[in-house]
Length: 281
Ligand code: SAM
Image 1 (cartoon, helix red, strand yellow):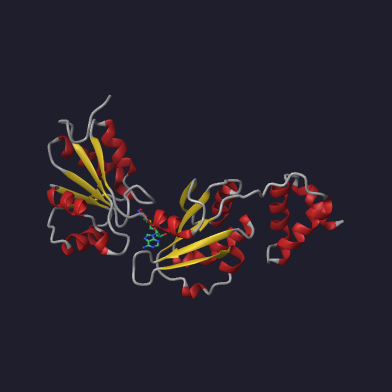
Image 2: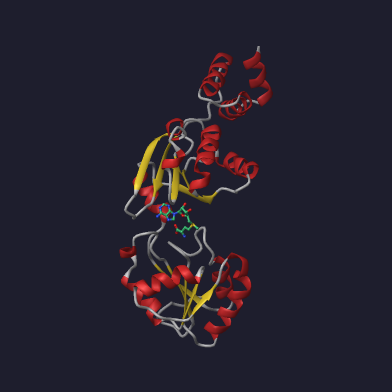
């Protein structure tokens, strides 16, 4: 069923993107939308409260976050259907992107409510476009699972992706994640984009073998990791000598023998058993 957002009687839910650091990136339309709302739903009322104070906006705030998203979304839907104007903003950037909001959108659509997005900054896209890596096709993953074994599986599933990969990470896990990336992807080119739009904005570009050497104490604040996709890495016609050398090179770069064998078996498209035999014979 077709229905235009601004030329119909259908109720609307506004999704408002907010700054990822620099408050000057709050758009005039975002300010206007929040000023015109009857209720502002947000992830954390303290964070959005500060933003609203900065722009002299005073509105009732309702918290909708991961743990209460479904129950709060139902209440908000009822209020929108009752005629109130509702806008939703997460703590920073786009709602629904590694942030709550998707369930609210789904429930709104199921209840005949249209959705309009107020554009704004997104950390992943900022990082991607300045990374120097291929922007034609990209894969956004967001955060890896906090559990290392699950994160390893997630990375394994990405290994053959040709698209540039975008990951979000927290400073206390950056070191571990860079090491996991190096172990899994080998020495691909990558970029750490840190503190975007803020005073200490920094892009660190280089092969993963160099990025893993950075002192983690210097990697503070918020950051995105952009990693090159799989570029001609699958080489099905390697001979035994080449397979042996490749394992040796990975081990020389600091990878465990087990991980190096696994990695080479994926690159060469031969079984781990076979690579193991070639390496140990
Ligand atoms: N919704 C947000 C968006 O559209 O980008 C993402 C929110 S997610 C909970 C927070 C993560 O985004 C951070 O851990 C970091 O990886 C990334 N991020 C947010 N702001 C950033 C910034 N100013 N610089 C670098 N990364 C940032």
